[in-house]
Length: 159
Image (tube, rainbow, N blue to C red):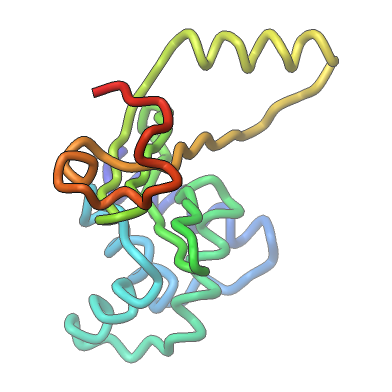
């Protein structure tokens, strides 16, 4: 989705919630749309400052929360309290694998996993509106260089 379209939808979302459409909120959305990488709130705050913006750290955090609430961004828990964001509006759903040693983030899509989740929702009459699947483990590079703790090194050796 083009940034202008995302911005129009964000303006509609804010008005629907009776919130002000501020330059700071617009700036955060447009910066989020300027990257296809995952980013933290602190990285977003740094980007705002580099652009010469006067947006406070608190406004960045609140705006990211609104963008997640409105379905513009996904928030991915990376562990140790760190949250990564990515824009999802207009993008195909995908899941993530995170390496616990180096932090590498791998995106993947698996139609069979999606089908199984939908079947389970149907079986239990559950209306799913969003889901996130994150697999945590060790990437091939870290496993090869021995970065896996001894307790896990022999588990599910799939290399």
